[in-house]
Image 1 (tube, rainbow, N blue to C red):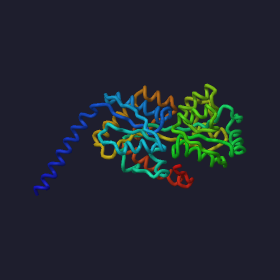
Image 2 (image 1 turned 180 degrees about the vertical axis):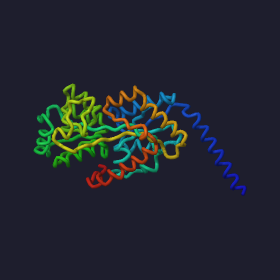
Image 3 (image 1 turned 180 degrees about the horizontal axis):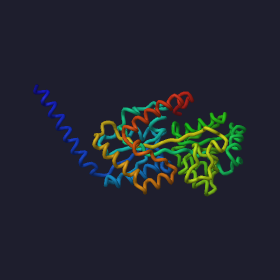
Image 4 (image 1 turned 90 degrees about the horizontal axis):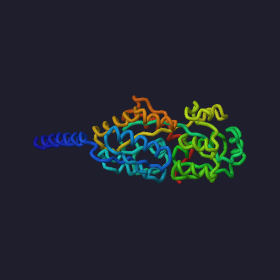
Length: 324
């Protein structure tokens, strides 16, 4: 009986202590781990969301890029962090879905993180170096089929959305060419501008400015609708590769065991940030489609992530995509 009473008293004290910690949270700056390199879409979105959430919480959120192995180094850092709400992580389709089918992970994507909320989703653009002789997507596909043995396609690292989308693109057009990994989308885009690679599937946020500056060629958007920020770019349906769509999303997680009250505060800050006109303008300007508010809950992220794992792991494994 004494043990039972002691156990009940300890549980009650723990709950009060946890509630007090959550009530005073956050009392100092928060670190947001971005598992991919500076200049890529994950990094850019992290800085926008960190600013918006920081304003809502009344505390600074500092973005730290922890890169390597397709984002697994950064995700491992998040998984091992103290579950106190002062280390949070931004991740995406590659780091929090595809990597589980590609890498031998030291953490479990569904069990070692607590979901906070979905942010937004975006398509890719099919790009090529500016000296590419093809003037449209049909001509590009014809050129690639003829020159596949000497073609290089860049990507952001094994298992990243750019890598998987690039392999699916090769499969869709019926040819193969060399894949060249970089530490992030920013580096791969620089390689394309420098004409060190021939082809790249990368986000509008990175591509559109370079296209308008004449530094690269852009042939199509991998979505059924044209982009509001660049309506001159045709869809894959219009350009000659019907049905080839690829989009990927971003979200926020915290380490397993983070108190529910803290998760609720972080989710509230995320929802408030995504409702802010300033944040929305920045994200929409990057061709991000913000998830509806009813899909911004921790529960919705958990369900969505599991459905994405169920959908994509068989496809990735069938394509024999492995860590290099």
